[in-house]
Length: 172
Image 1 (tube, rainbow, N blue to C red):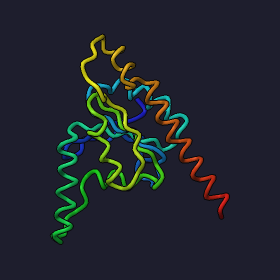
Image 2: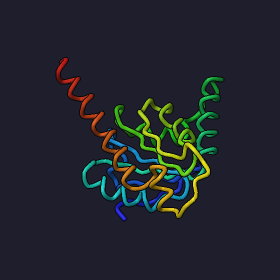
Image 3: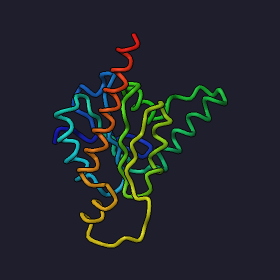
Image 4: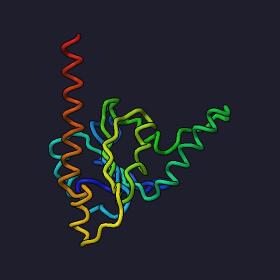
């Protein structure tokens, strides 16, 4: 498959590419919750050939993952020596200008908070209006949750990174 699913506590699984996961500076992270793993897997396989260090985070419970993060922040604020939350440990390996592409068959705000964990730009994909009917493939295309939409979000993220790095070179 090109990645493996590693169980983590508090509502998430981490997909990683062998030992390269532990190298700092990953360029992008795809995050997913809901019922679109096949589409994400297809996009991941296409993108991983072109984007070295691409990561995949499958969120099984956005609520538990968010609660764990808030609890860790609260314990630190109260100076109880709290360890980092699981999501903080995962996202610390991303480059500061990495993009987070979130895909959920619910409202995109459900995973958008991930950008606040380490200050990464989020490219949220999700369902903003409800009530549409159709087969699953048509609905995913209609709401921009299909493989093509994921690839487009990754392209926007990559273009932003390239554009940002060019600005740094011009001003230096």
